[in-house]
Length: 207
Length: 207
Image (cartoon, rainbow over all chains, first blue to last red):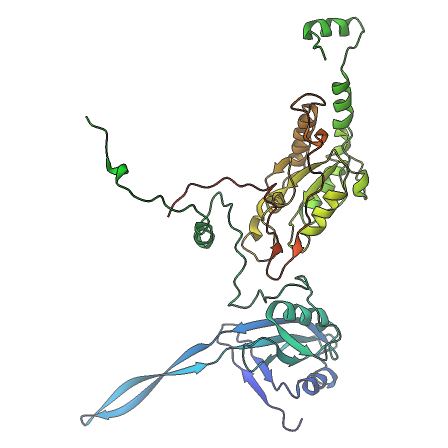
């Protein structure tokens, strides 16, 4: 595939399950290749999911040997790299023919702004249709050339994207018999205001 | 209506004369043929089905005729998680039922949202929109618990008065038999609760 950018995303976890970050412009061609190629033949798309990445700072530590006052010393340098947030769609692919997999491909939007677009892979794997709709519903990624892009879990009038990390759910915690932790913080908003101190409560009964 | 002496009544019954009142006869008939509305929302429905099947056999209490039409049903068993998308349909079904009608909230989700209470898509208890007669805790409640709730409801029906100042709610002409169906809003259901039905106690907890 000429001009297609593919990057291997490393995974630091024990499973070391790496994934392929593919070029949005050529994603459909790459996906068709993954499906059609006789050696790969990834004909089963088992799962499609979304990820919301916030702006983050990655700290890198490098050990350097430097000459300080004529002596060689090891100095640890930390560099900070700012990575702007983006939304991501992740596809898990298997091959029913060759019984291998999974191959994980990812597509990223340029930023987290609403109405971000990614190419739909429903034309390659039909099973991605409902799951892409779900990502649209919960993360707000618009899939281009999707046959039927509507909300699937929430109602049509709903305006937020609940799985995004900046989603703020409506406050209906007025009745909490046993609140704790995060719910306690929400329930406190509904508690009656503390009565004003006028000094009367300090007066104690005379002996 | 003059009250007959209980002792005289048992004496008469021993002699083969059965004395009763219209109210007793009417309530006896009603409480022994409660027809539930046939619908289930989540895993509690499986327990409800088990209750209706031969091992637990709700037919022993006259509740075996699950009706697929709200017009023919007396009892709504809210068996399972009520999502915000489903709540308007539940209220609409309740409105379509003929008086007298009763509601059993079955399981933690129907009572309060249960384990999904902190989620964005689950209603925090069906009593926010319709009046509930019997609550059953449990996740899910066992069939015995549903039978217990059923017997509680029978007791409740048996105690309802047909005449007088404290006659049953459904006989009072100013009593609403329909409840407003919530609309799908931009962030939540509108209104988030029917304040005529849902009046939680004010919790006197401060800071």
